[in-house]
Image 1 (cartoon, rainbow, N blue to C red):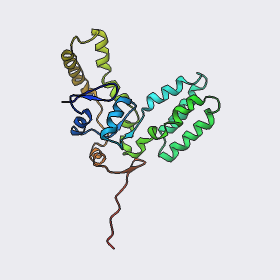
Image 2: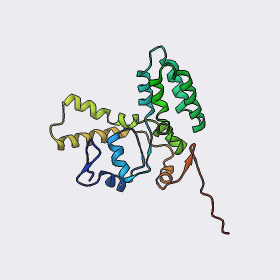
Image 3: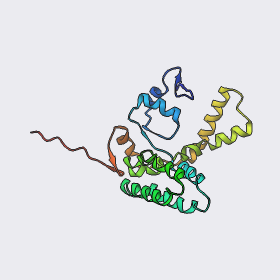
Image 4: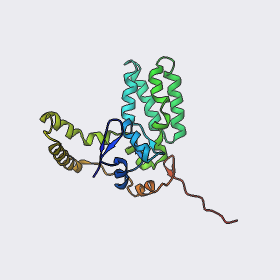
Length: 206
């Protein structure tokens, strides 16, 4: 049974992260700071992948409307780049174009390059799943909508039952992960570069 995660990242009734590890969780997350503090205890080398949908939205909010169409296209050039080198070049282009006039918007990208481009170190088939947390959020949109309508679930037990049934119903519309056979390789620590598996060099006896 999973433990309760507090807002400060601590857990009650045991270790949440240890429970998640036993359930086979993958070492990739988004920007939830409380969760990341807890993850760091179990996965000190965990990779952080920021959600590009939210990042684009945050950058747009820091720009005037007249600059938003061009900036949005420039950001698409980053996260849709064929490899990390091209993505980093696109980031430099974005900084040259918008940095002088709108440094606050630019820093939202340049200050988090590693977190925004972490997906390049995973299978290319999985990039569409890793670049955004929207698939996760859309899963719970039905739950949030029902919660607003009912103005709460009444009790923790009722809330748990409601969430379970709603998510169970929503799973019929879930998209299956692309190339699921690669998940085992990722979980076992296989290295990928720009989406391609990096073969381990054979040790040649002297």
